[in-house]
View 1 (tube, rainbow, N blue to C red):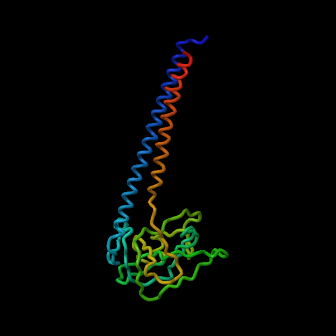
View 2 (view 1 turned 30 degrees about the vertical axis):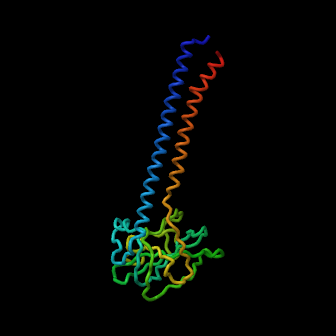
Length: 252
């Protein structure tokens, strides 16, 4: 026959374990929800900073950053530069999308007219040849001095590359330092995304769109964590408080 005292102790221990587990789970999920809200606030501040920089007057070529730290403060600034294309160093970055279509980002260095170095220009997007993956489109490139209007950006975003470092016209990624050494170019630690306004009719698409810093993603995660927190709280209240009282009332 079961000992009532022993049975009561086991129930108390079980109740304590359930309570501790619930408290830890509720505290943990609530903290994660708050953390996601904090991340969303940080992203909103970043978005405001990007928006404010984009409204500042255009930078001249002479003001472009010389170090990576300085470049961070110039991202999204409008810029107008003059120089000559280094067409022999044009690279087609593969597996890049624009408006949901796969193709290439075409990048070409521009040697600045004041001899203050060279800057990488993300000129636009071109579709790939569905029949021949090794074929690249013929992009007309002016040989004389040109003016490029755009906005300052980090170097092209890196994609996962199974093949590692690559060379040639078609590449998955572009490492700015290695690329500059390969073509003997004194590259700025940034790139310029060429705007459609004032760009030549060269067949490239420049519907870049606004960068998404992922604010809504963090709000979505926060909702999930808080919902899980509420679910654990509700389950504890129902199974540990409400349900036992209902059973006791019916038994009595």
